Image (cartoon, rainbow, N blue to C red; front, side, top):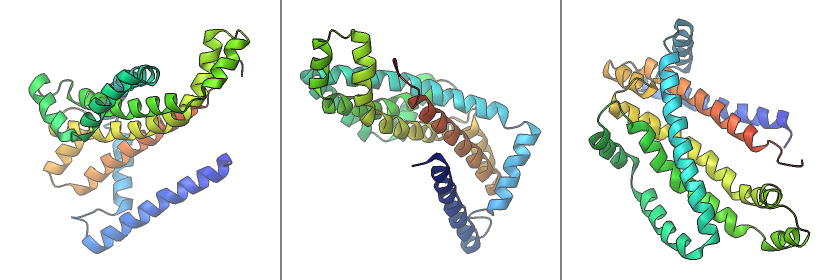
Length: 247
């Protein structure tokens, strides 16, 4: 799809969400859901005042650290499991169990292990992200075509070239959607952990606004978090389109 058309339809999707939000405001009133215009205005006010920068930086750090840690673990284990079927069978069972545990359980356990305002958000993100990336990596490995590797080996292609130009493009077909899904999970789990952890991030600001029954400020912080999610998702998509060796 051309970039302009993709951007137009993406904007259309966001517009539909805002319309549904406006409908919820009309039906439930401001206590249930604030008017979108009021929430966006409050978000702009938070940005102009500078109040947004520290919470945004803290939450982004939690997300990126947990995503990087869990993503790397899931990727390495997924690649190894794609090579060794016995290891894959064992780790897939563990991955299924981890995916079946609700994030709230990990948050409670992390609060007991690390204490409040510690590693709770990043740990929760890492544990949630790793099984998703693992599933994408092992699916990519298993769907790759071994005949391409054999052909490259017959022409004595260097292992680095074979990995970057043959194996990685095949794996990425399953891995990239898994990374995008994991990134969405990462933001959701980080915010949930921060709300319960009462930390300094966006989740802590949401918890504070909720304690004052301020739905407008609550939704303003949600808007800011979603903007950051879209930015990081765009950066991930751009990184995935970076040319590999020799292209």
